[in-house]
Length: 267
Image (cartoon, rainbow, N blue to C red; front, side, top):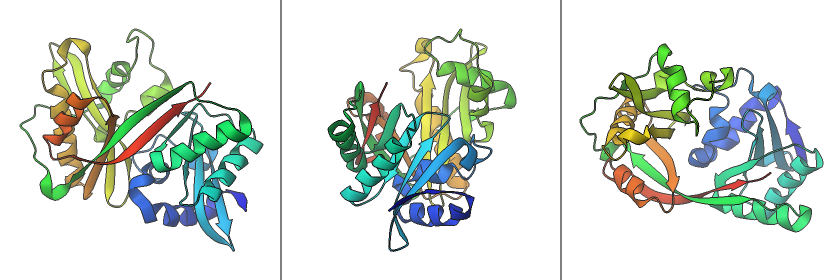
């Protein structure tokens, strides 16, 4: 059976998610720091697939981003969780999930509901273990409060578009490392989520004028060192499967490819 999960289920959600931390960093991160969610149960909707009262799978619909994720080892459970979201008419625009879960989600949405993604992106999951980290000399520094807007602008297709309060709130200086040059913020990398043993890095961006000069790599290196100092043992990140230059950049720091990730985008 499927049921919606609420505040009273917080520990049950985390207990399930922590069984596979690497796959559930989005769900785990929604309850902790850094997180742009003031109240995760207000901003997001959580669902559980249960058998005999035991939680066998979870789904989360993230309201701020319109994303829908599922973690369940059983194909039947994945289908049931997708059905639960569709029956409740919850709107989502993307499925960013490890491929072993994304493929059956996308297939079931097409088979039963006739929904096909407008775009599917394949990504490689790269893992860095603390013991093999190869840091590089870096000029990157932790972001300051005054860097919030510039960090948000760096991610925009049109940097002249005004920064919204929501975009500003998603920049957490303590977990963002940046480089300034020629009087402007030119590169950044930030943490998207934490669990007990993992951190997930994302938002690696460099101003077009300064690309291919190693600034992104410096930001990632400094951020990895910061995360390891905070006590995590592993760091993961995702990059486009075809982006071999980026993969080689990360491999130079000690990252290794370990899994596949899929982003399916819907209308």
